[in-house]
Image (cartoon, rainbow, N blue to C red):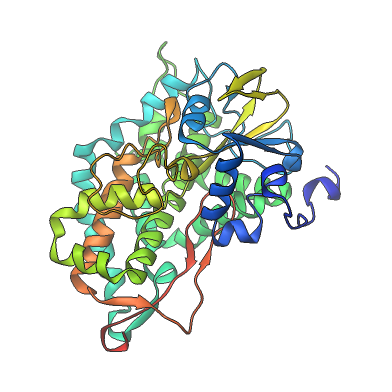
Length: 406
């Protein structure tokens, strides 16, 4: 691979969103909502020449149609990037198409049932309180650095049976794969290889020290004809669990705290009416959905009257679908007790998130424990909120004031 292929320069700024959108543009990262409104008002599907050709459905209906169409759209590439190398890091089931997808997904469902989450919940509550203990006396903190990112890191490490103290390593890999990797193939592949080496060591250890954690679950899994999964499948699924189990939920918790810090009425209502939390979590997931996925167009088709041609990628924006006023009245308002809320935060179609029960539980617990101990907080005007770029959107710096400082 040439140096030019492994690293591509920054994109020129967008001057025409409808015909030349770029989800890595700093303005999209900072505040994508008015951009999505502009795109949606122009067409249910827009296209850019960037990323070697990429479509984006802008309405809920168009997103749903693509997510449910596995004949014309493949999941073999799930991130829109500047290159499309033949060798891509597999992470079944998210990168699997039918018929391989269903058996790969079914293997991962048992550890994420509601009952399994009830067993994990006390550990997550303990993690939240250990973290709050570390900064509550200061009256201020960067909630992204000190709280939100550590909750899912430590929870998924606990489930996988790997050291919670390795969290900084996991966070670095996620940054390299989901953000830097959009424009830097070498960094992405290096991070994926490091993750494989890390998990291969744990797999080897389990062969002589069996356990009941998620790594052992994958090692003990069998195909329909009774064969164990090959090592590439095991490592790919473990990579997926680590990446998908951390960045998405940390982003959703962070965006929720950001909203509550800037919306005192919603914060005070949740403190006074804690029974609203389940509905509030669904609404915060809708309003600040963190995950945008991708598909590759394999055959020519038509979506919402728009022709779609092979050779292009599709930026499948579940967050934009969740802001579609045709699906959600007052789509740009956060309504904590919204009754009808068929949001797409966990995806649509066969690839709907395996870990949705885990994400809901972690979000609920993280907000409950924070509001119990820090009911009054606001954004620190001396600091700056920054958001992640690309596939998963959430606060990466979230400076808050509370207690006497607030």
